[in-house]
Amino acid sequence: MTILITGGAGFIGSHVVRLFVEKYPNYHIYNLDALTYAGNLENLNDIVNKPNYTFIKGDITDENFVNSLFNTYKFDGVIHLAAESHVDRSIKEPLAFVKTNVIGTMILLNAFKKCWSHNFENKRFYHVSTDEVYGSLGETGLFTEKTAYDPNSPYAASKASSDHFVRAYGETYKLPYVITNCSNNYGQNQFPEKLIPLFINNIINNKPLPVYGDGNYTRDWLYVKDHAIAIDVVFHKGLNGEMYNIGGINEWKNIDLVKLLCEQMDIKLKRPKNTSERLITFVKDRPGHDLRYAIDASKIRKDLGWEPSVTFQQGLEKTIQWYLTNEEWLDNVTSGQYQSYFKNQYN
Ligand code: NAD
Ligand code: TYD
Image (tube, rainbow, N blue to C red; front, side, top):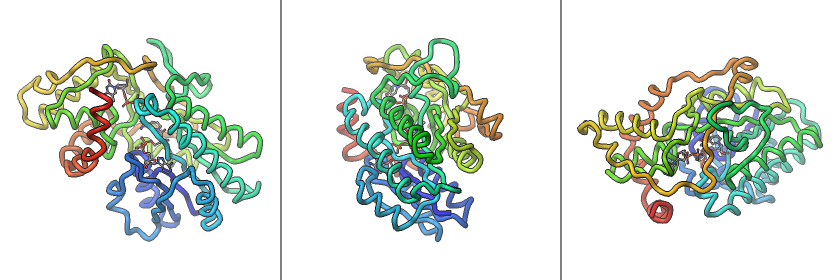
């Protein structure tokens, strides 16, 4: 099998690439990534010389380029993760999200369709999506695969739109697809603009921890390696035309999570108790901030036998440890342009 993984130099993509390259020596894995601010080849240093791995630098919105790749390599499977992925950036620059997340997905779908010209036997297009397409829950309830889409941020709207196009290609052209909608991921190699790595970095550097609004927003957190395992399971065992929700069964209010993180960081950094908690600063809320996300993951558990393998305590421990032992990685990604993003977002 030849498999195209898009966005493989990013956070989740790099874990998926590594899993597939190491677990399936008979597959050839092509990693297509534009290396935006979020893409980092350092994430894959350990597998770069594997014979079944090839990195291709390129943009999924470049139609001629994407078509020529499909002509050359005839990918049997696509696992599509490339995206603009940060809600705050989508509020400032929504058009960039339409371009990559909607148009980029369309270009990949068209290239895949053209490449196999309706002869889709043993082919698969796997679209990686988010629970944010479902909008916001109140204090109770869970997102199931039947929950109606109700996206609130430009990021969520762009992902919802791309999901609809994937589904429409399945209905209209019989393109064999699967879609997964996953909750918030955390773990090593996450760019420090998302809550957990941003706050780890700020604690290390004794900077304020900007909690949006009153901090009473809830997210369901999943360890990134468990997401990668779920993607492997769905890619191989999922049914065409199906959606699967993936979640950590692990809800945390932001403020409680941040306090736990502060506690664990104080221990790791051998700082007196409550040192990090004093950095918590309540700041202006995110516009359109979704109150709560929580996933009902019973379909993937019952049908495909997947469930998270680590507890939140274990996953967070591994994550903190990784950032503390990879300060060079953190320094590299937080130099240059990151500084102006940070000033612009939090000033
Ligand atoms: P990320 O921002 O860390 O990585 C995205 C990658 O895509 C980067 O390597 C970037 O260089 C690449 N990319 C961006 N635009 C591109 C383009 N035009 N052409 C080619 N490559 C491009 O994102 P992530 O957090 O790893 O998320 C990966 C996917 O998983 C996304 O589709 C996202 O919507 C989805 N997802 C993320 C989460 C989460 O918590 N992070 C949860 C559920 C679903
Ligand atoms: P984030 O990691 O951006 O993921 P998402 O918006 O996709 O859920 O944010 C997680 C939660 O943390 C969300 O409720 C927003 C909140 N948050 C803050 O309070 N402060 C911050 O600086 C960031 C980045 C997020």
